[in-house]
Image (tube, rainbow, N blue to C red; front, side, top):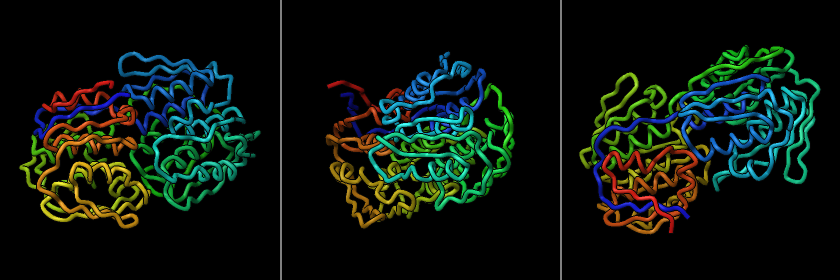
Length: 417
C-alpha cells in the first residue's frame, strides 16, 4: 500500500499552481448525460475520483478521453442506465448520475454510494427530491431504482443545506416540465460553476449563489466547451501549509472570493498575505495565534478545511477551538494528530486544541481525504520522520500532492511498502 514518508520540520518556499476543482468537475461530468452530444471540459486534474467518474460514464455508454488537462466526453452512445456497485461504492459523488439519467432517459439504477469513511451523509435528500419531481423510486438489494415518464417541476425545500442534493435536483429539473424552486439550496462556488455549465448547455436557471434556485425546464440541452473553476480546498490547504511551516509561498490559479472565510481565519491566526486577482502570497513567522473556528455551509468556514486548520492549531500559542457544524463526527484525524504529540480534547462536535511547542514524527493512518492532507501538513512541522499510510485518500482529491510539496522544499517521498 502506498505511503508518504515526510522528514520535518520544513519551511515551505516557492510557488504552487492550484488544479481544477474536483467537486465541481464531478458534477459537470455527470451533467453531460443530460444531452446526447459532445463536450469538452478544461482544467481537469488527474485524480482517482475523476477516473472513477470517467469509468461510470463509460459503463453507461459514453466515450471519454483525456488530452492533457482536458476531458472530451461523447454521450451520443449512452445505452445503459445502471451505475454499478464496483464503481459507485468508491465515491459518493457517483450519485450525481441519478438526476441526469432520470431526466434524460426516464430510468436508472444506481448503486448506493460509498467514499470517505465518515458520515452520515444521508442519500434520502436525493431520493426524496426525485420523488417530488415525479419519479417512482425503490431501494432494493443496495440499488436505487428510479423511473419517470416525465419529471415535473415542483417546490423542494431541503431540511439542511446539501451540495450534492442541490446539484442532483438542479440537473434533473433542467429537463422537467414546468418550474422547479429549490429552497435552502447550497450556494457553494461549485454549485455556481455547475449552473454556468448547465446554462451554457441551454438550461434556464437563476438564483445561483443564493439559498433559492429557480429552474425552468426546457425540452433539450446540447454539448458545450467549458473551463472548470480552480479548487478552493486545495488552495486553502496550501495556504495553511505555507503559514504553519513558517514559510513564504505564492499560491497561483485561485479565486480569492471563494476563500473569504479561510483568509479571514488565517489573518486572525497571524498570517501575512498579499492577495491578487488570481493569487495569494502567504508568509508565516512561526507564531500562530489561537482562534475559534465554526464550520458552516458556504459562505461560512468550509468543513473540508477543518482538519487542515486543526493540524495548524496544534502548534498555536494557546488554546483554540473548532466546532464542526456540518458533520458532527468528522474528527477521525484527532487521534492520529495526538500520536504526533498534539493536545486535543473532544466533546461531541467540539475540539479543543491546546497548542504545544512541537510535534514529533510517528506512523499515521489516513482515514479520509481531508484528514490525510492534515496529517501530511502536521508531518511537515513535526521533528523527525512521519509515515502517512493509505495515501490513496489523498490521491482522490489532490493532484501530484507530493510533487507540489517537493517543489516547495518539503522532504516528502511516496513509497510502496
